[in-house]
Length: 175
Image (cartoon, rainbow, N blue to C red; front, side, top):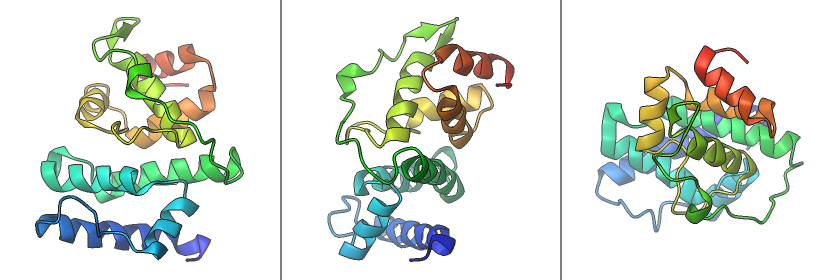
C-alpha cells in the first residue's frame, strides 16, 4: 500500500467488510487478513475502530456513518498518528469510566464534555474497544450542531488542551 493510495485501500476494505456484514457476518471475527491488520495499524487504527464504523454504517443506513465520513475521520486520525505521534502508539486506553456522563453539559451544551474526551482519545488512538467516536449519541450531537465528525476532530487537534476553543467553535462555527 502506497501513501498515495491508502484511501483506496481503506475504501476497498470498507466495502468488502460491509458486504460481509450485510451478508450476515456481523461479528467480524474473520473479516481482517494479516495484511488488513497491518494496513489499519499503519494508519493508527484498530480492527475494532474500523468494525464500529462498518457496523453502524450497515445497521443504521442513512442514519449511520457513510463510507466517506468514515474515511474522513480515519484521515484525521492517520494525520495525527503520523505527524504528532510519529507513528508511535501511546499504549494507553481511555476507559469508559473516564468519560464524562452522557448528560453532562458545558456552557449549556449537553454531551460536549463527553465528546471532547472521546475526540482526544480518538486522535491519540486511545479508544477503549467498548467506546466509539461517532456513535449514535455523537452523531445526534453533530447533526444538532451542524458539525462534521472529522471537522470536530481537527478542531480538537488545533485546540490542544484548551476546551474553551472547542466550546467556542461549537457555539460559533469559528475557531
